[in-house]
Amino acid sequence: MSTPLTLSSPNHLPQNFVVPLKKRPEKEVPLGKDIPIIDIGQPEDFLVEQISKACRDFGLFQVVNHGVPENLMAEAMKVLKEFFALPAEEKAMFYDEDGKPNVLVPNYSQKAKLYTDGNKTSEGEFNFWRDSLAHGCHPLDEELVNSWPDKPATYKEVIGEYAVEVRNLAKKVLDIICRGLGLPLGYFIKELIQNQLMFSNYYPPCPEPSSALGVAGHYDSNIITLVQQDLYALQFLNKDGQWIGVEPISNAFIVILGLTFNVITNNVMEGAVHRVVTNQTHDRLSIVTFFTPANSTTIVPAKQLLSEKQPPLYRPYTYLEYLGNYLGDDSDYDAALKPYKI
Ligand code: OGA
Ligand code: NI
Image 1 (cartoon, rainbow, N blue to C red):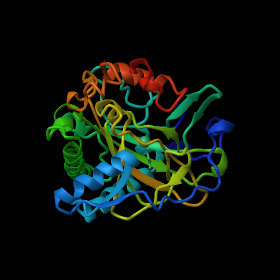
Image 2 (cartoon, rainbow, N blue to C red):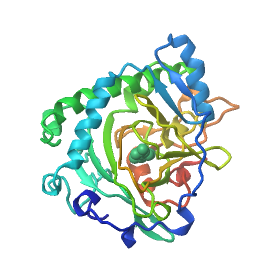
Image 3 (cartoon, helix red, strand yellow):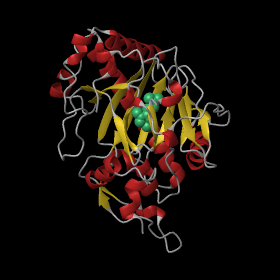
């Protein structure tokens, strides 16, 4: 953990942000022209096939015509850019030495926090070249919303509305996935997305992009993530082990399946490994909404997907226990699941 970049504004790359050689980004990464872009305004019958295929082949795709109002997406970007542009003392109140919300306790606080995250690796620790403003978004109770920034003045109203719209979109995508898998509608919604966490990531221009990363390659730990971005920087690892750039499309959401999806679907569908690179000239803001199980939830393959021919590949575990592995073991992208593999 390190002092947030927006509080310290370094003009060179401090040593604790230098990425170990093995993890540094390659210079040339092609844009993935084949990453699906799905018009989710089509009748649902057309969507089941397209979304199922995108989930099986990529674990990551973009959705357009999705019903989240474009002006709300623009407003959300605007209030967040304004937040990160505030004078340091206005943001400092969201930073504390404990760093990010400590998810490794049963009833952890989802109150707003500002922090700079990092990775522990066998070659040493390093920080990511980004600041995150993180807070819960569901349910929108008073205590939670009170912890959100008061400045900009429209933050609570805009982000509150945004959180509801993005949740509706996630529910829609998840039920279409249910139809494709033959799971009852609501399978994910009822018990697997109790928490909704919004991470607004601010990536300042980076003095040395070849030695830094906005975030290192990872699976999201959760079920499903929706990302709004306005500038290129997100890359994903394809099945051939090649990094591929995700094209920025204005007003689209990027849908990313998390590692927990592998378990629920018994590997019928799998999450996507992704990372964020930096650049020297532009700052970038992404709004990342994670839909996650509650810490106490038991994670187990859906019984509808099991048979004699498809025996369970994972034994049951609680989400809290798994999070401990997720944050502690980075020997492999999916190392967090190692203790549960049958
Ligand atoms: C993340 C992530 C992508 C982005 O925060 O897990 O993958 O574009 N972010 O910020
Ligand atoms: Ni991610």
